[in-house]
Image (cartoon, rainbow, N blue to C red; front, side):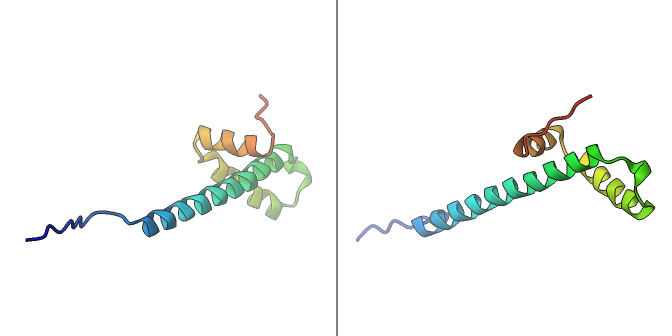
Length: 88
């Protein structure tokens, strides 16, 4: 009787390649999102809300609230991606 080597949970090379491509795409997307977030954080930090229309202040507040919900590590990554830093 011949031996059949069947591994039901095995991943073939094609699946591994597809997973690698997907992971690379996700990492590139993350870098893009970090740059956008870093730029937005920098813009919010430089704004003077006293000189802006109320609708702009409300939009900036929503953006700032969303940015503030990020983890410290993610925010630091975002700021680093645009070469910005938090100054106290």
